[in-house]
Image: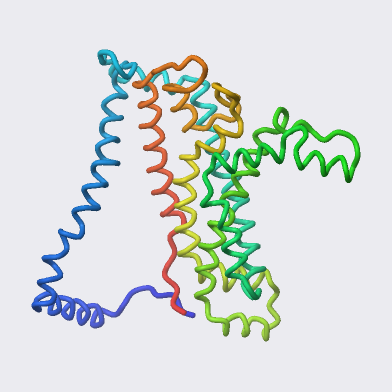
Length: 319
């Protein structure tokens, strides 16, 4: 193994000249002409479904609007109120808590399962079974999770059978912990699949050399598995950072009641935005205020992703 730092100048020059000559051929010119026809549909969808709504939200965030009436300009007043709103700050803090705690638990379990499944026969079947919760609708999973942890659910029935007595009231006293446990369960299969794809690229000879050298399982993981799959781990970490800030359905369906929102203690940023517009028995319809919260969260996602990519940046490893 050797870290790839920089190619020799002569090699870079030869590659550059070969690319230039390839681009000047008839085939290269045809490829350039086909570039925009293939790119434009995806670019158009990106502009229509992401750029335009983001700009509209930014504009609405400077107004007071109930969704149907006249918009009234408020300047940055929504942002001033937002940064002093204890409900928003609590939701933002809970979002970061999910990002860190659930993310750490998910990646630890995913790496452990990867090490266990790496040499297991039938690992493709196990991987497919583990991936299944990720493709099921979050509302269905939250209903199942509620059935498991209700006062007369499977968990408390097992508690009574093994330990006797009445089990804890999970939904009332441990709602936040149960939500995080459920999110870990839902996401573990997906990230295990991604990490296993990166680990499967590693040549088995390296592990055989480690075994001959007497390396422990931890040493094999630290010096072989993690460095050689670091690019995949970094990509998975970025994906989790983005997806964790958008979690909504699981918490809403699991923690909420009929026509009402979950307790404020388990609100994340997505629930706060929804609650400021449509949520609760008495909807607020504060579209301008909710848009300001959405803009702040979009900025937070951007900053976190940029920082994470810089933090996880490593030199490429050739093997």
